[in-house]
Amino acid sequence: MVVLYLLNANRADRKEYQEAIDRAERRADEAEVRRSAAEARLDTLQQAVDEARSARRAAEDHADALLRELTRLRPHEPGGDA
Image (tube, rainbow, N blue to C red):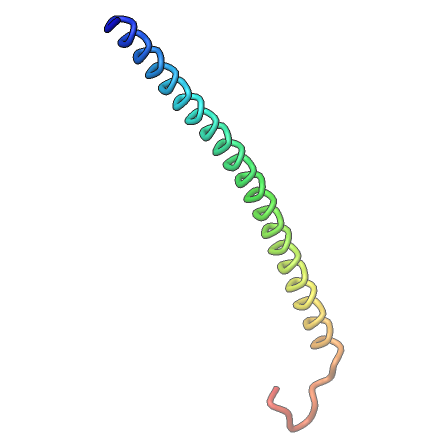
């Protein structure tokens, strides 16, 4: 009778142990999915930042070119600081 009790207890322990392993693996899989999604979002955000920086540089270059053109075309006013 004691042997049956111990075998049954051992079986229950193994079942609990396997369930704990299954839960841990499921949590690890879910964490991997969240990590992958976060990395994809980070890549998207980094691309948006890079595009915004590129657009800003292009706008600054265009503004500089317009300023040079304006300076070239506008005669210096008498009595001005220039």
